[in-house]
Length: 430
Image (cartoon, rainbow, N blue to C red; front, top):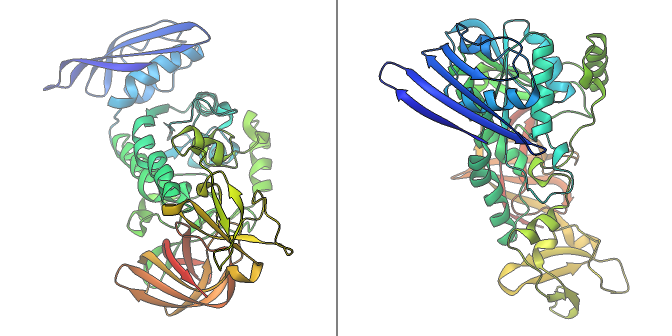
């Protein structure tokens, strides 16, 4: 599947083509566009002809799923619409949260789905938020409400920008969070670029977070639903773009969202959520890493004194705080305390050996703070800390020890509910 351009770029009359395959069937789309209007189209399986429609109108036309895939592949790279300050671009994942965000955006919305790379050998690739099935669900939600939907193929760029660094970080003995990297450096940049092309005044997503004014500037804040709060995952988003973002679900709970979707008759009201990094496709990250270059290699498991206690099949399979899979007997419970990539060694010790009170992170403080609450994992509780700015980020003195701090994790500093800093853990000590 793909797209093809030809024609006169100087005056914006171009011929674009796209195709799509599924279950041994194939569809093709040929569209001639003058500026933002279709002047000629050859796409079998659509509900109505496209000639004379704007690209925005064409993106709302229904039809056979495969024909719509081909059309989406054709018009996605060249999609544009005249500016409209009341138009909202909505990031659509195919799930209930983005569907309700679309409802809130109103009839002048346009849906956008990023098609991202998923490991083709993953066991449940179809369940990922960026899978072909998710794209279809997102499009059906938009079209069911009479709203245009556009798909942007970002697979190769995503693989280079997010997946490859994920593998490289593990090879260096780090424990990265690809979701915070994606949100902070990849996803929102492409979504906002699309919003501009679509003539939309702002971008809405279904995240459970809020945007508030704090210390004279817009900053990210926790969502009202403590169980679903996604401010940690969004913490690396540049505050400079928050004036163009909208999180319409930030003040409500997940159950309120599902109830709203059911009242609106949306089919995705009870669609299950994807819980892991999307490109893993439901697989364990260790299996993924082994398939992508970090092969099994026997190495020693040692205690803090260097005494060999056993062997392992690859240091990258372990992260500080991990107990499962060590396969050693030391008389007392032991945990992975550190890994040494250079010698393929895993160092273990008792739970107390994991305690860390000082953390250095590279990143940014968004406000001048000397104290805050710090989260070092998405599901871990926040810990009060003294905060000191450094040349490349900040240093933290935690009021109580945190166990299982790993290089590569995301450190997020809160002042109350507001995100005032984020960075990547580079060092930690007792």
